[in-house]
Image (cartoon, rainbow, N blue to C red; front, top):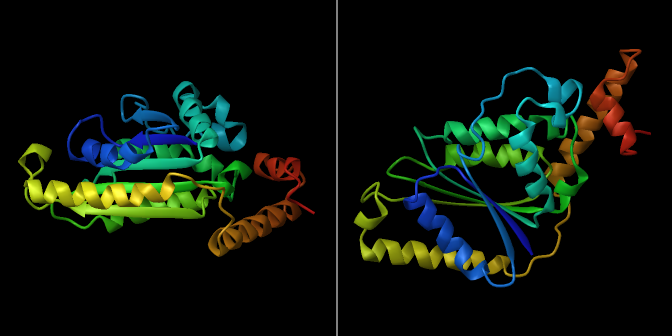
Length: 230
């Protein structure tokens, strides 16, 4: 099994240990590829729309974007781990997700995403994890992933892993490892009802755009090349 991990911070603190707890039962026999933000992706989207009007490999940041995107496409399981900043996701993770907007179903979805599974791991000191998790879940759903599981921890005791109580650390370790065991052997999943619905809506939007213009957009041309338009 191939696992691609996107770390929302380069710091080896609470988020790092949370991710390591998850990967621990999955080390043997699996190929794990990791990226650390912002080091492996130091760019903000420029809003040039090149990925929409032409192709994502023409993006000014394609040198970094394509490396991560290709690793996601090759993976059976995608893991995204990040700390919660002001009740949301870190800016460096948002910047990466912005670059993948061209692959949302209303634009140029990749059919390889429909069979993937994803796990979201997050942690905060006292604020809720859900706002940030929903943002990542929404992005992954629009990318076509049907099976998405989220797990978040409110640490309460400290920002620092070494300052957490042993009882707290053991509880986190036990809970995360238990979740990871569900992914020791996974088969491709099927499209969820929600993904089916979003795909159908996107298809209607693409077909409507073709009726309103003589020149098909790059999105419409892509959908035709995939055989998704009747």
